Structures are given as structure tokens and as C-alpha cells.
Length: 168
Image (tube, rainbow, N blue to C red; front, side, top):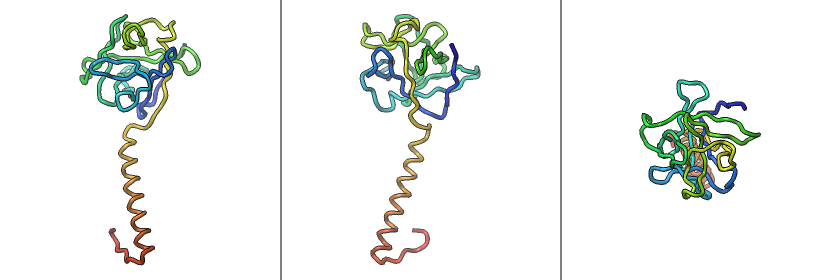
């Protein structure tokens, strides 16, 4: 099947196909497929490596995925030196495998839904990857909110007959 390039300017949620309310997130130093996970621990970035189509997978809390191994919970670490490279392999329209050098991501119900290594045939090894927002979007939103607030203040001052001076 085809491999895909991903937009490294976006963050993503990664939802399991077998357990459709479970998203990959981080708790302590381990990746899990938790129910309805939200927040930065459940948003992921694909950082391009020097190899085309291979990415470092990092959550928005700044922790990288290590090398996933068969039946062993996936460790995450702030150190990029401990990170492994991953590719995305399309299994079906909109359904992906996250492919490592030694194994693939799998939500292991028998291990409290920790992400472990496994083959791609099981639905628990298949994922929906959904773009969330551009990296740095929070800064742009904060700037927009400040501009809106300033505009509202100026409209209020004009409505009240207050003199608005340049630079306000």
C-alpha cells in the first residue's frame, strides 16, 4: 500500500479503529489509547527526519515515541536521542498503520490499552489520523483575541463620545 507525506505544520489526533473512542495519549512515560483523550498529551506532531517519509512522533507535551516493540508498552521521552522513526502506511481509505522499524502501533486491551508493538492485521493496530491545527496556532489566536478586544474598546469609546487618540 501507499505511504503518505504528512504536513509537519499541523498537529494530529490518532484514534483507534477497533476502539473508536480511544485516542493515543501520554500518561507518565507511556503511550496509551485512552477514552476520549483531550489536551496536549493527545495531540501529536510528525517531525520530518532526514529520510523522506519517516517521522519522529512527538506529542504536544514534548515527548517523543521510542521504538515500539512487540507486546511491550511504548515508552515516551523528552529526549529526541531516544526517539524512533515512523512511517505511515495506508491500509484502507483513511485507515493507517504507524510503522516502526521493529513493529507497528497497537492498542492492547489486555495491557490497559497501552500502545504496544503488533502486526497491522488487527483492527486495534489500525488508526484514524486527523489534523487538528497548525503548530503555533495558539499564538495567532491570542493575537487575534487581543485585536478584537482593542477594537471593542475603541467602538465603546466612540459610542460614548470619548476622544480616541492615535496609538490607543
